[in-house]
Image (tube, rainbow, N blue to C red):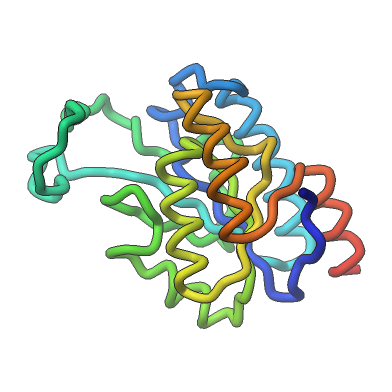
Length: 194
């Protein structure tokens, strides 16, 4: 499927493009590809005066804000190296961007993201980032539940598990919105926001 439209009030929402996560190799695309394509989209959104939201995940050093609950999967260590949660330099440094820090998989729960978007009249989000099946999918689900039109840039997302990535792209995202390549989104951005 291909993306068909971008609303006049669309925001780019980039998930977890931060030093510690970008250090992972990514599959099926390298994380560097997701970052490069997101930078391309962010530059175009900024040029059109549209919001760019940079979402990062972070935790207190003492683990006090770690998610509770039992899981069968082993939890990642909470003692992370200095700067692991800093947004990638290629995206950072634009004071007009909105930065959201999350403690969960998705960018809506426990953050001010919905308020930030609604104050700006945003009706649609374009999602990029890592990992497709975790942070990106969780955010897409919540955005859909909050009533936003959702578009996922298929070549600006990647995962640590190729099967999970494929499942999100082919089974989940088509039920939540539309998908398209960076080039398709940029073309629509040029037409819609001329």
